[in-house]
Length: 303
Image (tube, rainbow, N blue to C red; front, side, top):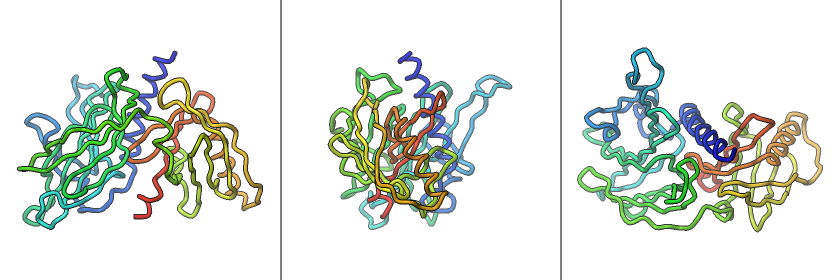
């Protein structure tokens, strides 16, 4: 059962990644980013996005299975990589050729003759989880979670700091730094702000639902009240158990109280944590239906 659930969870994250990428709003670099041409994903074939997506021809005539590529819209940053005083933009793409695989690419966009072009593209790997990234002193730094030698591809546990330099229109990767095995400590010392209860349930901007994890406890604001609960890891890396939350008992309008109760109920049903395109993803299970809450780092959101 554990192996079956891990495969199901891997497929679920793949679909979730595609769906959230397609519905997010890109940070602006150019109005043409979602319709740009990208190179370096397939041999001798450019990928021309249309509204952030590209689909190849079916593998079997008349079949539905085909290669797909999409822009990861909600994870991007910029900085001067070439030392010319002009910032390049770093974006990410997903690629799927059927099955449970979900390859992630990093791509550099640069201005050339007044147009934005794809200057360099680099394969990060299969089902790599993007945690956070930036450009520092002309170097791309990216915190990721990826599979170690003993990990199943669906369930990576290694937290890695990877970095690249841009040289002659190519990304040159530097030596990766192993930071440790994924644990609750990777979630601590951050104020997480809820953005989605599930893919189709985005939190209104005027609602404040937050989460802070520290020393085996989770706390925060649940739309109206303050709450707290115990949190512990499960049998496998990425598994967590959150106790039934308790908190203050202030009264708020019915719609806010309804959302608060919904959030606290979901929190007590969380079974896994992971990272999805720079956001903390808490997967919760209601009966046999799997949902995922997404939280943004408050420091990144405020920038």
